[in-house]
Image (cartoon, rainbow, N blue to C red; front, top):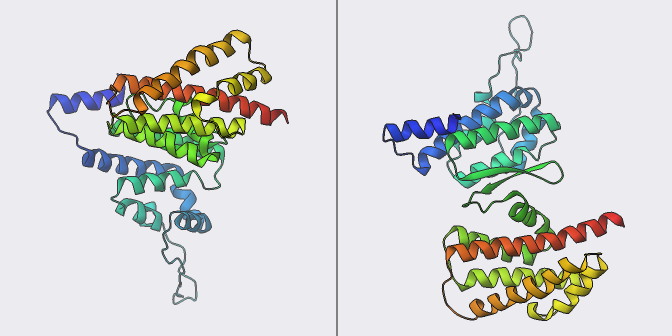
Length: 292
């Protein structure tokens, strides 16, 4: 049985309520232990790295020191240092805002650290998250980078959601609308605004890729030509353009123009469908750029 499940079973057996404050406190202590074991000595031995990190997170703690001479005229600079006495530990241990603390942890991956060190940090934080039963995830993304995400009910899927969010960074308006739809879903806002966000995200992405300003329902012919140019076989092209694309816009039009609330299951399906479609298009674009 995994440790995470053992902890859950113990809490349940003893009727211990583990609220968000308790989870955060447990996670912070575990994360500090992970940082100490993996980066503690490195920070203590490299004050430049320490200052670099403090600058990244927007904190300043004076580091200049004066070492007095003893009676024999020797500098008293040699003393045992512990991570708990470092400015980084002070900042992290005193941070009581959950999102700010997570941000500080993600910034550790921005430092110029060897890949094996980042990998150890990644594995350590993942274990800390699981043991603390937090609803967040730490994911590897392109370019040997690591990012924390909020965890929704099966929503933070590695390929359909995370990859799409990463790739949409270069399309800010598309990114904002797709991210807005995800946040509304996670906050259980099951209404037309979420449908509007999905629709607009896809529409804006198509305009960028196809280099036009057409509305979503007017893009079928252009999409078909685009897919043909990319070498997509006829059956798949027809499935996307005739069935999926036609019915998708019909569904969007029906619900986006009314204030009707849509069920959670329908919205989850539409999020995955939109994400899958956008991911497919962006994959084609990535392949095109790599071939140049």
